[in-house]
Image (cartoon, rainbow, N blue to C red; front, side):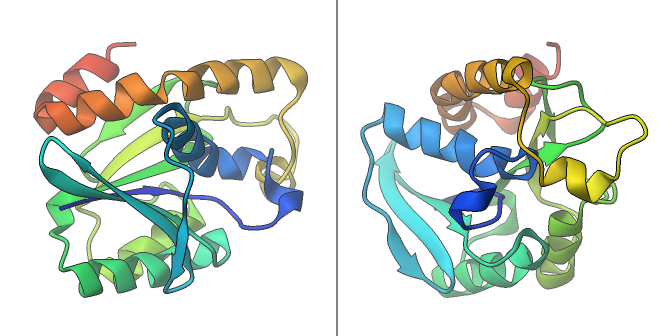
Length: 186
């Protein structure tokens, strides 16, 4: 069983913010696959699919980003998901807007959602799909990540999210090493 988590904040006011790019990526993937029904459990919206004979849970934690780990921990414990089978999709300030980077482990890099995940999973050893939102110059980070994309950024993010089907399907159909090699070259 695999768990794919898109990070974001719940609420309409956060829909088009930089911090919600994980939600947008997962939503676009599911829309492309015609999966539209979500269930609510453990403060998370989730849906499941059988892909290549394996159950895959897609999760959007509904607590604030900084509390995402609390929700993920409940899913991991309830469904007995191995940490090696978790992929977290999130925004990253240190990557240019719309670029992605795949990592098998690492520090939070100052991302409060990842800090909370590390706290609740007790490790930094979980897979990440980082989507770049670029780092602002002379702008408060909190206001920036909670701010909306400008039109140029929105177009770039929409384009990478439209590739979500190819990216997630590649992740589900290949070794993680091949996944990293393919997408970290861009």
